[in-house]
Length: 124
Image (tube, rainbow, N blue to C red; front, top):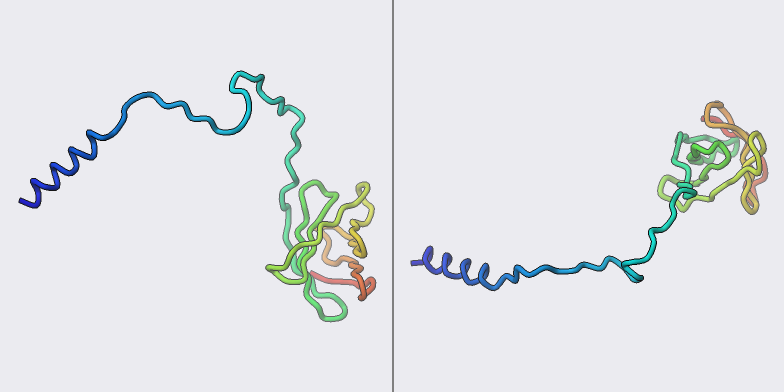
């Protein structure tokens, strides 16, 4: 008896389905508008290398070296909010307000300057 009730309930549920066409609009705007030109879109750089360094004052810092070779993300702990450092040109120090990073991902040591701490050497 339970199986028969289940079959009737399933049949009633399927009978209630509307098979008419639906138009789905994914966002605001004119659906007849010209497509957006994405030929000059530049993606942000990816992480090329992540390293952990121990500095002279015995603190540990995390550096994510980015693939553009002009920027890096600095963190004082693994889950901390990163400080984005950017070099104005290749080979120059990467800087942010109060921060300066000299070095590269392939090197065994870097020089890091932080607010209130000053510049110090750090080794991977």
